[in-house]
Length: 243
Image (cartoon, rainbow, N blue to C red; front, side, top):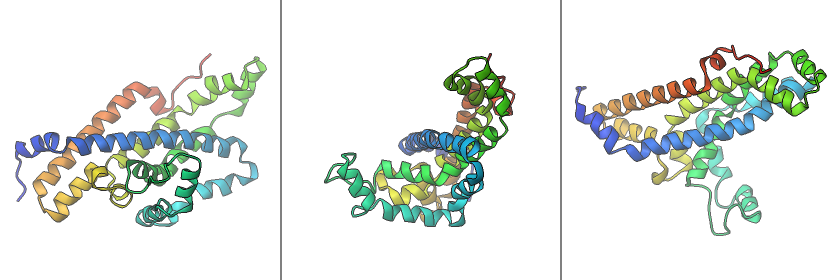
């Protein structure tokens, strides 16, 4: 039976604080990595793609032709101890010769980044595609360097895509449990894994519901703070180009 008990919410904040913090940490790092990869990729598609633009966009969305679960299991093989990828990382010194990648937090973050990267690329690409290139040319005509034209024109006009992409990546990543289950170890489990265990294994529905409610509330607070920091103008696409 579902009953409203404050003890469930108290336990959510006291007993499961580590999975909560781990979830926000993994999701935050994965979002930053996705932004670092996704923005240059979206920029290249929008401004340098040419006749290959459609093919590049197809390559971005191609992973969606397979299910989320299959993509994650594929990464389990890619990051296994005997895989060429791990051997290459060991060769260049990024991983010790006796170290491993699978069943670590790095593997979980890598899986989250890969699975949600298209959600970062597509909104940024949509914003960049709407940038009037005549504004960039006008800035260069006024003796702005390519770097300054990007920082003062292109980047401000693409902020709506950045905000949308980070939200579309961060929000589902916080509640994800597939990557931590297949690519991590029990010490890397996120709050989604805890909720799954409470609901499906222990059948402690009130505790699972309380954790879900607390997770939703924390995500809403994080989103509110982020939007306040980024500015409502950026979210609505009303950011003015700097002089």
